[in-house]
Image (cartoon, rainbow, N blue to C red; front, side, top):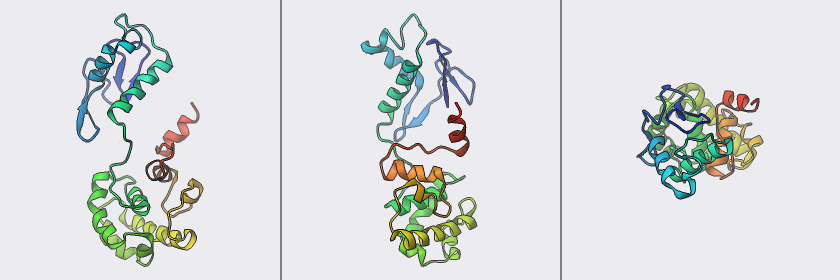
Length: 212
């Protein structure tokens, strides 16, 4: 997490987790398929660009406007992460929905370890709807809250088959009706599978941001 201050100098970028100014002690960000990049190197490269040298990273360290700060952040992510997706592994919309449900309070790495066998046994909602929670539990036992999640997976699959013809609904209002699916999971589906402008954040982030 990075906080941008209004002045471009050694204290411009501060880490919200370490408290260190990133231009003095930049941590490595592991992004873009293992490529290593830092805010420090990005800003130095940004400063060498003739289009920006007299603006955002000017040698006189002038104060930036909010619009300029936003542009630096957006330019960084556009250059370092041009394709926005998830680390979860899936083969269809139903599998993404299952993986996202399993990832709640659990790491994507752990979820990716259990889903290959789970999806081999239950590739679509139709197969999982015919299963029992106890059957699914054997595949997801190593994730957090396995009993509740296995129950939600089966109930979710049955509702998809019964109410949506076996297809994952594309509307947020329908997605949140599914057992175990909240707004954050629904927004993951919107952004990753349906390609819509949606941001998946924790509930407290969503509530606070709308008050700012």
